[in-house]
Amino acid sequence: MESNTKELVIIGAGPSALATAIYTTREDIPTVLYEKAAIGGMAAITDWIDNYPGFTEGVAGMKLSSELQGQAERFGAVIDYGEASALRRDGDEIETIIDGKPVRSKAVLLATGSNHRKLGVPGEDELYGRGVHYCATCDGAFYRDKTLIVVGGGNSAVQEAIFLTRYATHIDLMVRSKLRASDVLQKELQKHVDAGKITLHIGSTTDEVLIADDKFAGIKTTKDGEQTELRADGLFVFIGLIPNTQFLADSGVELDPQGHIITNEHLETSVKGVYASGDVRSGSTMQIATAVGEGATAAMKIREYLDELNREA
Image (cartoon, rainbow, N blue to C red):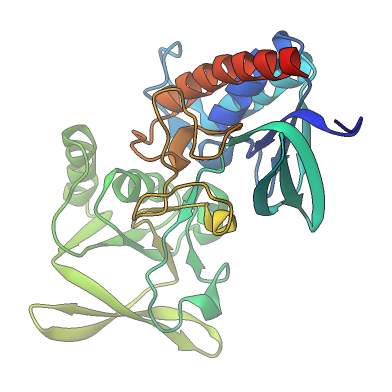
């Protein structure tokens, strides 16, 4: 093998990827992570995490991500910014295209996580980042003493709507069918509804983003067949996640119908030497604790694979 071939490349730098890096670097496996956005992934932009073991009062998502990063780097992990656009197996090596350049390695872990799903309605893309948002922790502070619309009915939507009450004077929560958030979150939500901070719109669809003078003005919404306009200063959308697997289109890595990576119990994909863990994996629970556990499992399986590969060399 060429001398510039890396032992292990990890695509992504969320909790699962960082957990793998902690384990592999402690085993003296040189490990390079490539992240296209925020180190820590979705966890880093989560305001507060209450269900990660070991924190009796919970922990800020940014702090947890920073601690994981620091731990991985302490053992020698290298974290670079770069976006993967393709991957293929070439002989005994894996070639990944990062920012247009080939990076060769003996093994690859795919821990690319997910992105927020968009509404797909007129006006949404035009106002992305300037009236239409997908991260309350990132952009909520821009709406102090203003009114907001939040779309979604799951845990994320309810949690983020509650978070946004610290800034906004009022929030309209648009729920297409029914609330799917946990009982704990629904009880907390009801407190804000009773206080007049949040108004629930059950059975309401979001049809269009309204634009006035090149700025966000509100939405068109339909309930019981009647379409109305709802005015506000900003819109936050939390309607699910899309796995970051588009770059695997011609890789041979098998995906499920939703685009998640299919693995076996050893977190091996359909391509030898390529593993997957965390939210991008088919069957994932979408929980940080399990993503970290999968990262540790992936590290051990990758170590076994590299040991066998190096013995054969």
